Figure 1 (cartoon, rainbow, N blue to C red):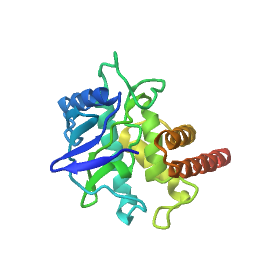
Figure 2: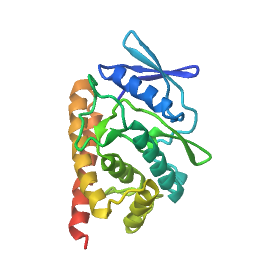
Figure 3: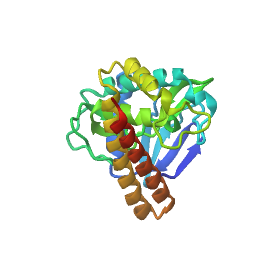
Figure 4: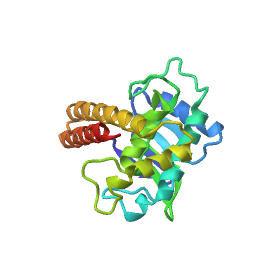
Length: 235
């Protein structure tokens, strides 16, 4: 949804009212020892500058190696580190692009998925695109990561694990993160997250003049309805 340009070892993106908050948050994370994320380098003439995070960021259709169990475990552990490091971040005067959710346990990435993760030789080495971050519950990020990485979608890619492995793979994420949530918790929040994302995409389609985002919204709604049916069938 953003206009991105690489400039040597940095990246230029369109900024917004939320950019100062996000930059302050990125600095906070780096001070907490999270060095595998972009470094905020400033803002000029409506563009933000961030350090370039090296690695391969998989694009759709996702390659075979993205579906390895190890990616789920590594992603969950990295997400736990991000969440834990966010505790204590000052939110007074903060401006967020994505509305805050309750309970505001941590700062959520809000788009923690393979398409925003950097890899080297199939191992996760970094995370990018923090412009949608905002306060929310840990499960909000966990459920969305599961949706994209398990995957929990109506139309499973031909090279991805089928839904008959979904429970097992969701549990792998929860165990690696250290969450006591269960399958039903993940499905419930994933469904809400997908409806929320559909509404956001439709609003952005109008705001940015990008009708293709309506097609994305349709997909999110289909997936939400599919997961609702799966939840109804759960014992």
